[in-house]
Image 1 (tube, helix red, strand yellow):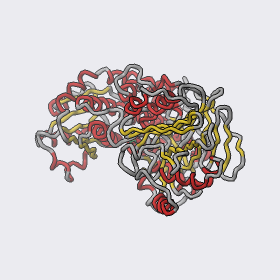
Image 2 (spheres, helix red, strand yellow):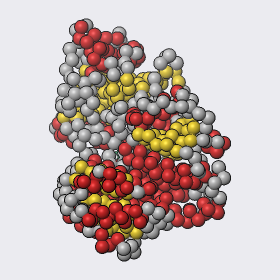
Image 3 (cartoon, helix red, strand yellow):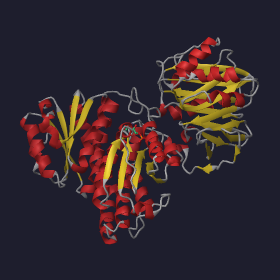
Image 4 (tube, protein in one colour):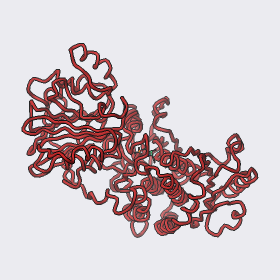
Amino acid sequence: MCGIVGYLGNKNISSVLLVGLERLSYRGYDSSGIAILSKNELSVWKQQGKIHRLSELLKPLSIQGNVGIGHTRWATHGVPNEANAHPHLDNEEKIAVVHNGIIENFLELKKDLQREGHVFRSETDSEVIAHLIERHFEGSLEKAVEKAVKNLKGAYAIAAISENDPGKIVVCRKGSPLVIGLGKGENYISSDINAIVSHTKNIMYLEDNEFAVITKNEVVVKNDSGEVLEKEIHHITWDAEASEKQGYPHYMLKEIQEQPAIVRNIISKHCTDDSIIQFPDLRMKDRELKNSSRFIIQACGTSWHAGLIAKYLIEKYARTPTEVDISSEFRYRSLLPEQGQIVVALSQSGETADTLACIREAKSKFFKVLSFVNVLGSSIDRESDGVIYTHSGPEIGVASTKNYVAQLLNIFLFALYLGKLKGHVSQSEIDDLVKEMRLLPDQIQSLLDQEEHIMAIAERHHQSREFIFIGRGVNFPTSLEGALKLKEISYIHATGYPAGELKHGPIALIDEKLPVVCVAPKTATYDKMFANIQEVKARKGQTIVIATEGDDDIVDYADDIIPIPACLEELSPILTVIPLQMLSYNIATLLGCDVDQPRNLAKSVTVE
Ligand code: AGP
């Protein structure tokens, strides 16, 4: 989960690389560096800390050159410091390498190389790559890279340059993403499109075990047998503007505010004016879905919370048994291949290593795989049989907000689509449900308009060092999501519980200092939630209640109340999560936390 960028051309190379690294900083930001070839001489600059510190280092320098690579790091081996920052060099300091991924056998490789006289300058796994390329270098950088990577076990996206074979960048990937941007008299490489889309919208996706030799005017892609490949060129439709902050103080706030428009866009993409639900990009036949016997959903973090809600919706509307696993636990199951089972992956980035590993395992056991992803062309997208794009646009804030809501809406639409295919939901029932769904954008906007009210609640509670979130039914996962949002951006310990579990232990935590966020809209679980809130109040807990507008009964038991519009129970998680996103955002900003790039985290967790 690092970011790689590279450029060959006549633009100001350090500026192209630094801007690209800024755009990739959500993938990791504890150190960064660039390497540039100028008049066939290799120069490297590295800096601990965020990318602006590297920019400050380079600002007074007039850097020339037209071939360069850059890297922004999320530490996996070796503390974040300048020595461990990429690019890494070989002994002779003629080859520079940047790497995203994990080399699992780096220790044995390092010992062999040290025995051969290679001197290591860092604690990282990545540095072995530079020395391996040096070992195999006989004049051709691409041949040396091809031989070097044959020694590697693990995941990698690599870019290498050398002053002994100048004028080119050699790249290869296995398990970590890498894209090539095509320009006129210039070319780019990047871990993802964000870093280069302002320069070119013509993109080539490198697949696992593919290599590319890139010069200013040419891109040659080969497979690991050395065959030259004809690669499809994709034209990207969105622009860099979409991934800029557009005047907001944080990406997270921009993305929270974008949610009404995102929901409107998804409805228009998947639902015709006469309420026919369609998934044009599905890549999976209706017959396969109709004959599905079981769904096994696996995901991480917020996407796992969406998976938990998907279970309720698919079982309700499509009456198909559905299981949900955390990706990193899924692999320990004894998966029993059975006709009609479909493994489902939910992933915003489409690069989460735990989730990607699961679909690979599922496919090795001949399961069909259907994925909900946001990043088109991501590894999970390209390795799945069927795909549903969540269409939430680039989500830069580490804390997922708009894509979670987009996941829930796409899952709701998919459950109806599947239910109709299986004959469990009629079109007239869908017509009524779609009417409720079409209210969502305005309902979400009405919640966003409660900004001041929610900020006041945040001010009252932002010094608390512990929160509990409780919910039931489709809103039990909402309590998990609210807790995750709060802890990951404000560093306050927060836990989500099924409200019915309080009496089995967690209620011992309740006292007058503990805020308890209760997700209690007027749904089938309301009465029991009401009882739980009374239990909390009886023990002097402070209650922050997400309640349906006009609920006068709950007022006496709510220290703070955030009203949400009345809505269909199955759509309520889309509304109940909005105040929780806003509450966590406001608490984190009151605490002065780095909302978009919280400590220890990165947007795309591409390590297992
Ligand atoms: C969510 O706010 C977190 N950033 C994290 O839990 C995230 O949902 C998880 O890493 C999964 O990411 P993915 O959806 O890209 O696979």
